[in-house]
Image (cartoon, rainbow, N blue to C red; front, side, top):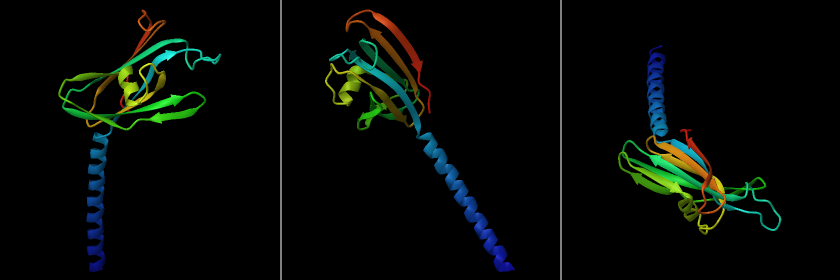
Length: 162
């Protein structure tokens, strides 16, 4: 009977330690997994060889603004979405450190560069941002009839943490 009681106490302690470790690991993992996913649409969409573009004809611009309250480090990955339900290119991760209260913008020239695409390309897809700490992420979408023309439409979207 004593062996059984000792065995039960030992198992109980091991289970408690394991549960505590799982909670601590889970909390650390959750803290390091601040994920934001923003849509991007960049470049000139035009009809080519009588095939309509995947979006309305025009010039599209995306600017994803990122702000941090505390010192922070994040990485961004760009994924292209192709027409016809096809997956496109996925970039390698790009790391970015930020000091407290800094803000930066990820815009179309940055997106196309990270995707190794020429500056005059058309691309649409997603930017995934993973950070150590919470961020403010706001996407601004504009479109115009000409590359230097007046804005026809503008949308501002706060990107929530997933």
